[in-house]
Length: 138
View: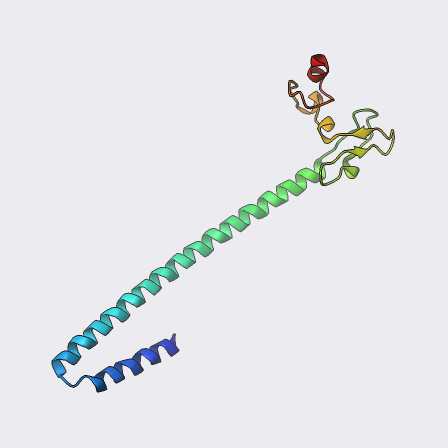
């Protein structure tokens, strides 16, 4: 800011040296001061808003961090069993959600099959091969 202050001061001196009429000089200098004052007020307002945005951003990052921790905890607590043999397949589920093979019985498992009625599926979805309701519809 001191560099800006020096530039403004230099320009003010330049204006004083350029305008010879005292009355005109006073008008010009008042206008320049008004402009600088308005600019300064706007900078202060921008600075206040920036501080508020930084505070809100920090709150958002904290909330996201908490959500991430909860998700990680949920993943660590997640247990999935093969719908065919009951083997724990939690560690072999592909991240992309594609079909995978049970390491014990070697049946192909679709991700939807892990969420049958026992895990809260209400059936009637028509897309899950493990739902009793889906089997009744066939």
